Image (cartoon, rainbow, N blue to C red; front, side, top):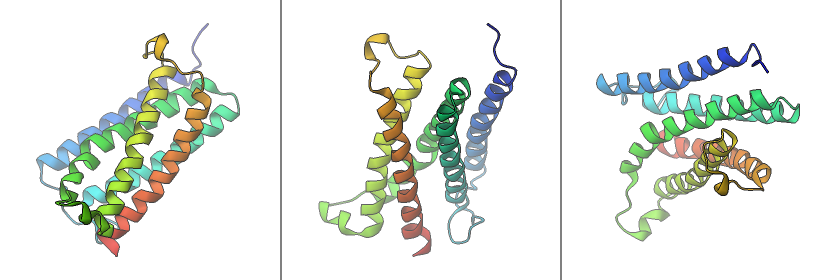
Length: 180
């Protein structure tokens, strides 16, 4: 059976989106632009780019939910894989590094809203990233069969809910760091 005509362009668009994001992050780093003023106001450029991409990512993942509901599983698979991989890039190359700014010296430091909210966001985000990656690896046939889970639909729903919770937590984190 032939692949639908839209499949190759969708895969190419996914590669361009993820590759372009990686290239932009490396270019910004090489030119010391991460800390330059952002376009939303008080935050650095890299934080504003990350926030923008995360909002786009959330919209894309939510759209993928509706693709699945309509029965367009091939499009759903490519869509969700793209957004989960983009999120991995953002977490690995932007968010993980920024955690160096919020290393608590003692347990009481978590009472500071900036530190507590940031670490809570990171913890929830870690579980969400793990769930999303597990689903992507399973649905693309990369995970060994013995590691497949039977309750994958529930994991998909929980992971999408997790992305929404983490996105709201990201907005709160952004607020505490750059606005409030």
